[in-house]
Amino acid sequence: MSSTEYPFPVAVSQLGEQDSRESQNARAVQWLLEQRGGSIVVVTPQKQFDSDILRRVAASPGVTHLTWRGLFTGSLANHRVLYAWPDRKHLNDLWGADADALVVIEWGRAETATWIEDTNPVRLLPGETVQPAPQPAPVEAAEPLPNGVGEILEHIALWAAGYDSGLKWNEEDKLKADMMNCPERWAPITVEQVRAKCRELKMRPNDIETITGFLERRKQGRRFNVRSTYRDFRFAQ
Image 1 (cartoon, rainbow, N blue to C red):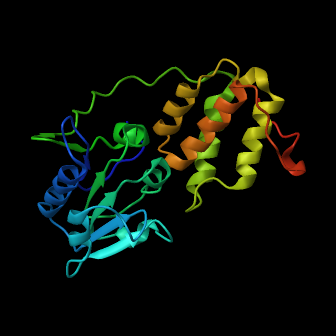
Image 2: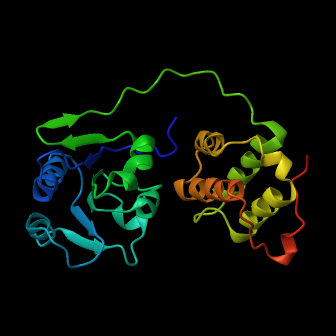
């Protein structure tokens, strides 16, 4: 099950072969106009950008133009949103959005791959609209993660759910300390296993990136700076 489930229409406009950026932008605009909902919000990285189509839309009466600077998810509520060229972090920040409809204009596949896997959006391609992939039939739960790692992630998910902004620094320090102080606990665990468990727990995408990033760095042999309060911390076996 995906970690980011939107209860409203979601699409991504992707660049196809022998395509143009303006055609890609036009597909996004057309799809959004076909959706029901409130007024349109256009989000771009900066106020100045290179697209005649999007500039016309952003300057239209009743349309709000926002940029990444100072953007918060609540400002998208009850609007139809066109989000142009977000990177992976800004896509993750859409967690909890309460828009009426959302279309993302993709800049690069690497930035959107994980978000597309999680959200299963309509894909807008040249001459083709690809509907969301059918959801797989429920499967039996995966084997529990060994060495208590599954329980650790469940505790972390509960902590993170208690904050609007996700994991706090002290919780991150506890996890980093355990990864260094108990290397045998984490050695047989793969990054993908942790990612799948975090998704199962419906954690925020940014928190999933943080946790899997820690494990990936440890498997590369890197160490962490942990504040003295938690330097010797270990989760109970």
